[in-house]
Image 1 (tube, rainbow, N blue to C red):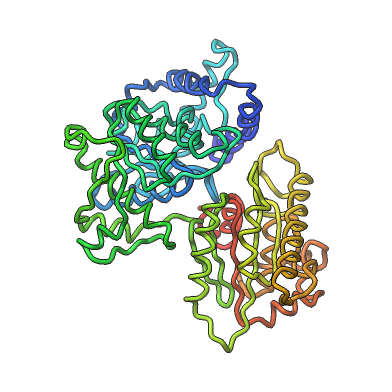
Image 2 (cartoon, rainbow, N blue to C red; image 1 turned 90 degrees about the horizontal axis):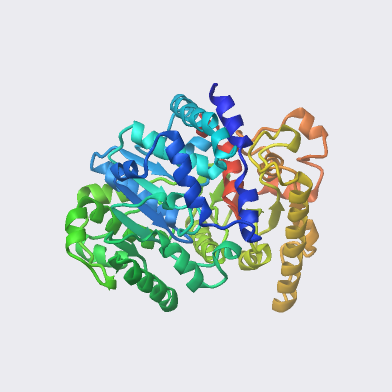
Length: 520
C-alpha cells in the first residue's frame, strides 16, 4: 500500500478513453455519470452538502480554462488563503492534478488519502453491483477528500470535459463560475457547433451563483445568456485587460502569449467575486451584462505576475537549443500557439550571424483533426518536422503514461499518417508559392520516432546535456546522431528552436526529460 502501488491500482481503473468511447457511441447516458458520482462520494464518506464547505470556484471552457484557474488560484493565494486546485490532465505525474497552495500534493499525502478513499470504495463494491469509479471519477472524488481533510480555504475546480455531465458538476453551490473562450472540441460528445458546446459548458451555472465569461461570438453568447436566464444565474462578460491597464497601468502576466490576457481578465473577475461573494450575490446581474473593470489590488497584480502553468506557452532554454512547449490541440488554440511562437522566436537572442534551425515536434490523440492543425503550422516554415507517439521512452519500458487500450502500433501508424499529411501539405505549399524550400524533398525533412526520448536525442544532437544518448542507443536503429545529412545540419546549427505542440501528453513527456526534478 505504498505510492507505487497506489499509482498501479489507479491505472488499473477503467480508463477515460473507454468511457468516452461508450458515450460517443451512445451506449451510455452521460447523465448517469453524475448519479454514479453521488454514490461514490457517499461510499467514501462524503456528502454532497460537505462540498459546499470548500468555497469552490468552478471553471469550464474550450481553451484557456486551465490557465484561468492557475491565474485565479495564484491571485487568491497572494491574499494568504490556503488554496486547493484540481485540474487535468497531468503532464509528468498524477499528483499534479491535486494541488495545495499551488504545489502538487506530496507522495506521502497522495498515498495516505488514496488508500483511504480506495479501501472505502473497495469494501462497499459488492453491495453496489461491483461498481467502481473510472479513472477521472476516482481522482475527482479523491480531490474532494483531500481538500476537505486538508481544510483548504477555497478550491478551484477545472472541468474535465464539457460541463453539464462532467464529474465535477456534482458541485451544487460554488461561490462563482467561469467560462473561458469557447471553440470546437470533443464534438462527438459535446456537439458539432459552437451553440451546442456553449449549452454543455453552461451546465455548470447554478441558481443565484454569479458567473463570468470572456467575449464570445454572438451566437454562442446568446446560448450562455439563455441558459443563465433559465437557471437563474447572473452572468457578466469580462472587460478586456486593456481596461484594467487604463486604471492600473501595464499588467504583467506570468504566462506568455496574447491569448492569456483574456484568461487574466476572467481570473480577476472570478477572484474579485470570490472575495466579495456576498455582495456579488446581492447585487444581482444582467444576462450577459458587461462587467466593470476595476483597480486590481497589489495582491492581484502579484498573483498574475507570479502565475506558473507548465506546458502552456512555456519556454525552456538549454544552451543553443530552445524548446517552446504548448499543448495546443484545437484550431483556435493552435493559432494562438503559433502567434506566440513567432513572437518569441523573433524576440529571441538570435542574430543574423547565427544559423537557426526550426523544428516541429508533433503528435495528436483522440479525435483531433491532425491535418487541420498541421495546415495551420505550415506557414511557420519549419526546417524539420518530427513525429512520435506520447511514450516517454521505448515502448518496452513504458509503464503507464498511455492508455493500455491503445496499441503502440496504432499510435505509430497515426504518426506515419501525420508525417504523410505534412509532406503533402508542404508539397502543396511549394507549388502554390512557386519557390524552393530549405530542403526540396519533403521526405528528407520529416522523421518518425518510436518514443519521445529518441526524438529528443535526434533533435538535440548532444547539445542538450540532459538528453543523454546511451551507447546502446547509438548502435541501434532507434536514434542515430551522425549518419544523415540532416543530423550534420543540426550539429552545425548555431541555434535550434523546437516547437512541441498538438498534445498535452506529448508536452508532458518532453518535460519529463527536460526537467527530471518535476517527477519528484
